Length: 109
Length: 329
Image 1 (cartoon, rainbow over the protein chains, first blue to last red):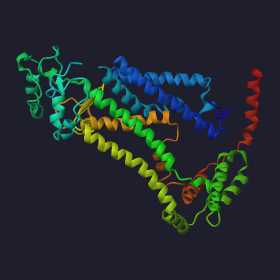
Image 2 (image 1 turned 45 degrees about the horizontal axis):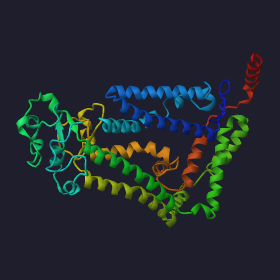
Image 3 (image 1 turned 60 degrees about the vertical axis):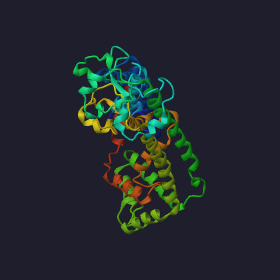
Image 4 (image 1 turned 90 degrees about the vertical axis):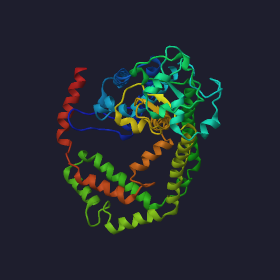
């Protein structure tokens, strides 16, 4: 991740659009990867019903924490706001998660 | 997974399924009903009592399905709702379908890469380049507006956006003309058509293939319960109202794959894969290449609404903060 810019004390945000885009993209990739792997794991462990979704959101929370650690706990240096690190790509990955969860539940039963 | 008790006569279990039979039988409910059975603790028991509890299509299980009525087993009604999917369905429907979808996605990516016309290498239209540069200049002004005084900003803004000869101002008739020219440009149309073809043709073919080979299967069971409203979506192709909604027909499995594999494609093919192209096209407002009149107008609007706020008066305080922070360290 490249620093997209720093936000100075009050109101002068300095952002570098290219770096921000690349950072957001890397978030998207890691989330997609995690949702696929998470779907496979949920299927293999035989989660059904709500447990699986809780598992998914747990994974996404862990991913958020990982991203936070990766950005050295200063999110605004790398992203324009907090929602990027918390919810970016979470719902896009849900479809992949459900697909791989379903297929691996069925493959192993 | 129980072994196949309600199979067609003399079809060996884990061998290649009899494709001609699958293809020829038109009645989808016939296939699906003969392919699934209730859970039975005894693997080779026949499901006769359970099937009599269910609806009409299920009772039409043909006589070729080898039933052994001797070992009839009384089922509770709730248990009759649970279905066990044959492992052969998994091996010959679920996995092939997914693999084919992935491979077709990869193939489509490379085909569209091949078909991409080498237009960017030819010298671009100077007018387009000029307009593109203009948009970039205006954007730079917008993002750095707070670093220049209000008067300077105003002067630049007028230079770009005034209604008489502002650079970003496009007269209405000219905008229409530009749009018309874009639509009549044969190269543009060709490009768009190629892109559309590389999207639509594989999808149509795959859908036809799925319909042809796998119509009417209950292919999978999604591991979470859903409400009745999802029946039309997930059990597309089988008309059974008694089956639980979480059972997915093969046609719906195709759709699930179509949407769910998008993430996988972006991982294995990199960012500019074929599915992303569709999104890009939509973002551009329905046209390949950028529409100069539209981007100029959008840039003008965003320049018009910007609130100018000069940063210099606050700079001293900001510098003080920074220095204090440095001293603390």
